[in-house]
Length: 122
Length: 287
Image (cartoon, rainbow over all chains, first blue to last red; front, side, top):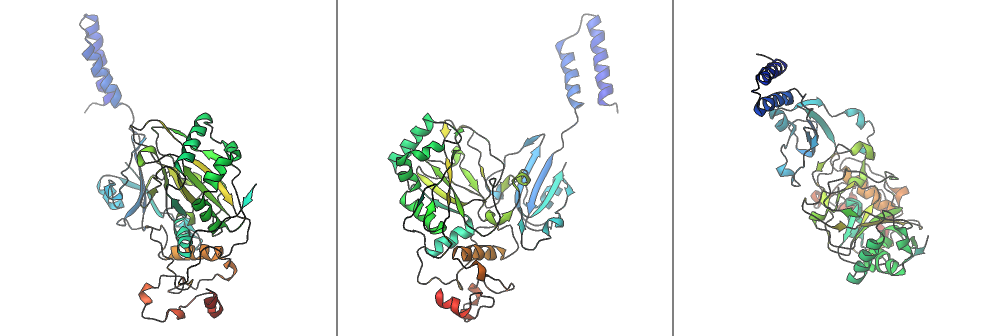
């Protein structure tokens, strides 16, 4: 299968030939522009979740999703969040890149943050 | 700074509820005439920190010393509390997006209540107008504000939606943020913020309830999740309440199933024998 770069080169060579014959139409250039868009590297999507325990089956108490460079607005009702557990997110294609860090829990007297945090990406 | 006094208005139960939640809502306590006067004043003085408002006696009397608000402040900070010296106005052009969660700069983590952060809505603030969002009980959760930037939707968070003239008191370090307004919202939203200060040694001089007993009081939180190990919220609320009672030096907790863990399941038992109650027979007599 030819790469996007190869297809873009072929598209532009065709357009050049058409231009020399006086037959170049806007549609040929639009096709080239669409191929150019495919050359952009996709932005990494991030999913931060805070779970009730370190289990991937534990209920989520917090969620923040950043897709295509934008923070996704979450419903106020937690029951309407896109995922209720870490496992829900894994089943939807997310991959864990950070597990809850026990280094934050060395002082038994201090409750830190919102609990067990997983960070996922896709 | 001007100090003042007034009768306390909160009961034991209400003070303990403040310890659990970290905030207290007083809906619609400021009269309509004062609210309108504040809105007009803010329109003429649309600054972020319009502290010269504190020089307006009608504002001091109608808002800062409003009976229910000042009575609640008196209950939590003791007699001769000091009035604010700075006023901020979270004046927004709507629509607006949500802020990051944060606790305000200057926060100190612990059970002491030496000052209160107070918010006042001179106009109604429904969910569409981006009311402050609060996380109940979070005044006991440690985090530096820059480490909260990745949090967004949080289970258990509440909106301070309120009618005009509402005041809410908060523990200074409670987690909060401006919520997102409705996309179609227009106009301006004013929200004034200021601090009151303690001058007196803490003591239980609010409205004491005859049946209220430190040993059998329910220290568990109605706000869930607590984001802590089970029953830790009882320890936190009990310690803050004991500090407010002026008994911090005596405060102890044994752990396990001892005081101040909830005792509802021990009703068949002689509650007076709760293990770990730190104030002993003498403490029982004085409560």
